[in-house]
Length: 74
Image (cartoon, rainbow, N blue to C red; front, top):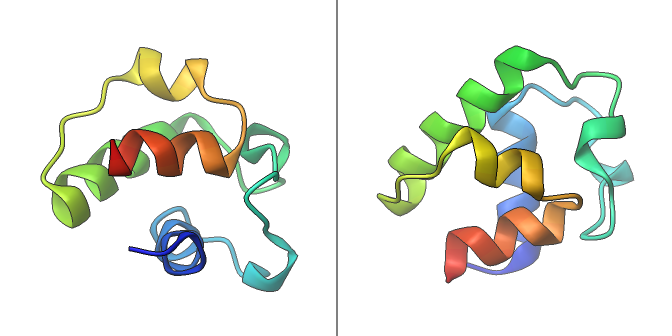
């Protein structure tokens, strides 16, 4: 999966409307839509899209969308 497709699917998963504003360098925790629920939505996203188990600590350790992408594609 290319990073652009990952960004689109991530935005859908955590309900971000302005996908065009997102880049691999976006610090996702600074987004207006970010909440504690977003962590659970990302965990479900990784399970559904990549069949990968990701833990809350992994999400908290990540800073940018690219960091999440690297976790997904590793």
